Length: 490
Image (cartoon, rainbow, N blue to C red; front, top):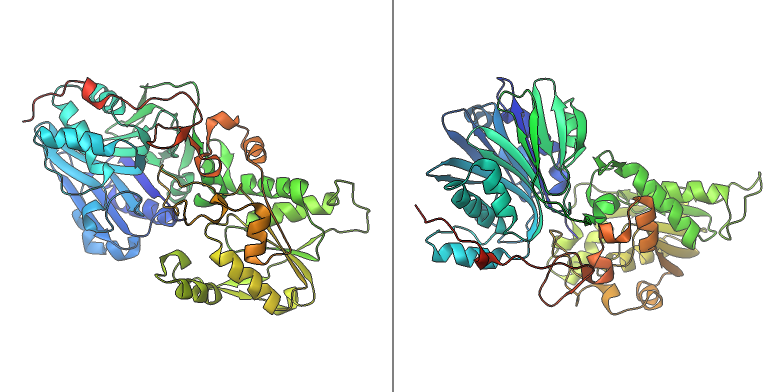
């Protein structure tokens, strides 16, 4: 699995926004490594710089100097819809009769093709196959007839899917979160302004204070002078559909998402993993880095009770937490290796075992997920080659049985090992001595949500959106795109 995208927007009191946006994008770099971009507005004209590559490669000092203005938005992207090229890099910019727009999008629309076809028939020319340009054109068209708030509401009534948006309309910055809150977005206060960002870690980077999460279906408009923000609850729905994988994998551990610190959530998920499927071994070790908090919580719980749930004797310390795998941080991700042989070799390049921690011991290794099974197979073999007597695998999330349509670049059903194999079959496939996943009920319990308020599509095969050919977990209908009369194209 690969990250989604990261969005940010700031409005400051007289200070150029480019450098704060640049630092915020660095804080969100884990959410996308394909492209990075910033759009600013100086009160007279819009400025844009968007390049392929990491933030540090996409921007030089001269680039930041040209991005004038105290208001702006930024984006880091990993492609989930659209081509892997500069045409889909963001923020997406458009100039039209009512001004200029910049738009950054985290998420994925289900009905983008329908809206694109309708707008193209009305004369709109598209330069990419991404869904962000669809939102930008639809909003620009609505702004020809409506004020800003009504135009955003009208667009929200037409698009269907997951989205957190930061938008610049001339020198006004706004943020929008989809009605089910699938993608994260939060508000922060800076010394001289306000910020909207995918994660609170970006706010921390700028020495700001987290104010709160943007509510599902809410529009937040930052005041042009950086002195505050206005909010409008444009859409309300009975249930949310928060992506649980933000807490399991995608978000930085130091971020607070929907009132929950990600690190503590992962530790609690690790404790639940011990309660549900703990196994008495000599050591428990994480697959770095995503498994670390799970393994820490797992070991803590193991120090308190036995695998049978009985209190530990005072002299019994339980399962030892140990770092048994060292990560080479300069190796590309295994999922971008084009052949199976290369992916298998990349595991050995990426992870190196600490022999003294493993040799002659029984080992529990904890990871956040098993997707295709290739990495897990290689990992188990690596530990056994290093002298582990037993290797037990525990996963801090439910098994992934279906693809994600909401903005996570995930394997197809044909590639997902859990789509057509039982836990025992997967255990045999990866040659582990035992294998267990965390239950969906445990995830809901840790996040203090009812299951119906989480997006669990990838682990249940039932989705909170109307996706052709898929089951839903609630009553939901795709908007009738042709039902709303469009203003004439100018």
